[in-house]
Image (tube, rainbow, N blue to C red; front, side):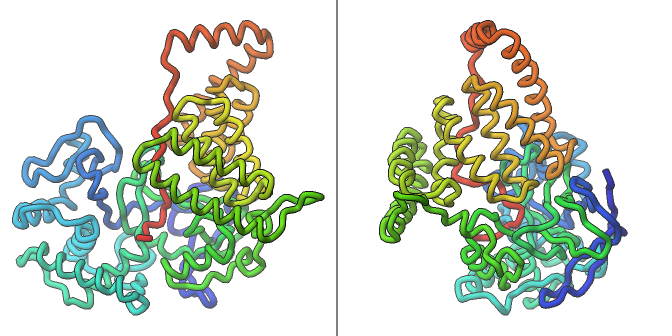
Length: 478
């Protein structure tokens, strides 16, 4: 595998898109084009006491900073590593009486770093913070109001003895955070835990069908190749999930990132037909029926969100089953709304340990996803992994092992072999392979042993379904 440094890429002016990144050499799927540490990063407000403020790992027991009583660390090593970035923050929190919000903390860390190093190019950076886009001129009324509140809160927090920055510059920093920040996930990549600024990565332009993916691994953000990339090719990443029709993706990109997407998939509406598919043949439903079922699906998804927030999972299952009854005679196998309900149903049923029904829905979901997503898409890999584990728990060892192998092949490219989730998957792959051999040799004995094992040990419970989707790497307020 190639591991590129910053010399493997160059910044260039991309027609109609401003700056972009270009490959200087060939990359193959799974190659790390570059790995970049954060210029500055902070833990989310809601998780400051359960996540290490240096390495962003979730730990049972953390050491608290004795001075400000706000920052938490894995151990003395992480605490010492944090001191350069935490020193000013520590005394400012003590002076202020409490820690401000994550946005204010991130802006302050950026400016303390500038105070130390100047605002020019930092070591290993292709561009300076000053050169990042802030899009403040595109802000709507609501965003301008939020910006004013952030600037006021920042000025209250910022110590008088620190270097003083003008209002316009402070607004620039908040604008940069608003449209360039990346989400950091915990060590297993399953929960978004913080937010950071990565100047080099900010230069990668969007494409709905990109040739690269971004993953947070071992304290750095990695840009990884998804397909073969030749020298001179532009390096692109996707800012949004592909599982949406082109018009919706374009709306989302315009609203959140202030540009009109002109990628091939949007221009030609590639895959839209699959995501809007309806049943064909003699019983083809009328346009009116399709409209009714889509509206029913949208209403159901709202009710599901409410029930999930309240933790009423049996109600979620009932809503999903009722919705599927309405959808199945009308919508095609790859229809977006059918896939969304199948995904929720399989996840919640797995959590409730109703594995056989969950496996059926998970299989249909994965079959649909395979036709829509890029074959090396991280979200596809995670979905196939969940479906594989569900089949394994349901005793469907052949299908389960097949899916776990498929997921492993995808995650080797999107996450790499050293990522904790890929390592977990490798353990599952070995375990299911052993069980599959046993099953093929003697089916009766396999089920007997499985039954005994389940009686003796509590079956591994799936994580409680969260209302969040998998963490998106592009940190953006909806």
